[in-house]
Image (tube, rainbow, N blue to C red; front, side):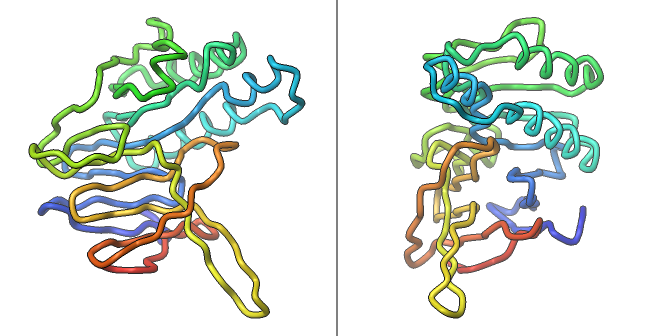
Length: 221
C-alpha cells in the first residue's frame, strides 16, 4: 500500500481506500470499483456533442496500475461498467481487450447497475462475469444502489459522491469521496467525466475525500 491510501475497519474487516477511487479488501485480494461508465464520452459524441476522447484509456490505465500495486486476484465492479449502447465503440472494447489479454488470471465480475441494463453486458470475450444485485460476499453485500440489507454491510455506487472543501478567501472545491454510513458505503465513481453529487453526512457517517492522490478523513462517525 502507498502513503496516500487509508485503512478502515468495517464489520471486523480491514478495507483500504485508494486514491485511484477504489477499495481494496486484502483478506480476499479483491478490488471494488464503482461506476466506470466506460463509453460515456463516446455516447455524447454519437449524439453530436463534442467532448474529449480518451477517458476509457485513462480508466484502463488506472485499473492496470491498481491491479499491479495491490496484486488483486479479483475485481468486482459495483455497477455501471458501461454507460449506454451508443457508447459501445470498437476502440473502447479494443482497449479493454488489450488489458484483459495481459491480465487473464484476474477474475472480473460485474454486479449490474441501471446503466448496464440499458447498455447491455460487456462482450463475452472480455471474460467478465455478470450478475444482478445484490450479491452476498460476507460480511458485505455488493449492490449498485445504496440501500441497506439484512444480509450484511452494503458496498455500493450509483451516487458519484463528492464533498465540498472550503479554504481561505471563500475558496471552494468539490472532491470525490468515499461515504460510509452505518449500514451502507458509497464508493466514488471510478470513471472520469461522471460528475459529483455532494453528500451531507449526519451523525454516524464517515467521509473520506480524495485530494492530491491522497485519501483524507474529513468526518468520523
